[in-house]
Image (cartoon, rainbow over all chains, first blue to last red; front, side):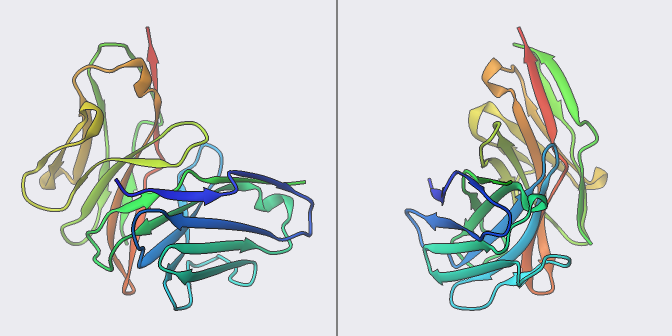
Length: 117
Length: 115
């Protein structure tokens, strides 16, 4: 099956620093990647959708200058949390889709736990 | 706007008993429906999906789900639960919104399995 990896799996940083999270599709090319955020005991909240080579589309209420997304290749997307604050602490999950087809399955990465001190 | 309701936040079943997790959706057209499972601290694993055709869908790990349009439901079932099935289960619906595919997740149902 399709595999998506995320790195790092857990990161702890000081308030005010920036953190970069990588999402890779290991055995397929992903035309579209998604970034989600999950708070404890809650569901996933879509933050943004990114298509390779174009700017990400952010969901309402998500600050694009704070959560920078780069989808540089068909196998790599990065999420950079800039000037992180404790309220940014969360579980960030990416997913990747092979095609533009709406019916295509999203494959999820294992998630990255961010703790901002 | 599409939405998903999982009315049961927490369910406890005995090992070997049958399981049904409820999911109701709201979407204007024929939806694409998914069930995912998440173990603690892990990402999501796809159990099964419905796009069209046979309304009874078979998935991995012995799970199945039935799409009932009249009830706007997509309940997940398993005839005999194993202790390893303890996890959080998310129902999701996919649709178009502003030209981009969006998957909307339910709040999740946490399954506890007791011996």
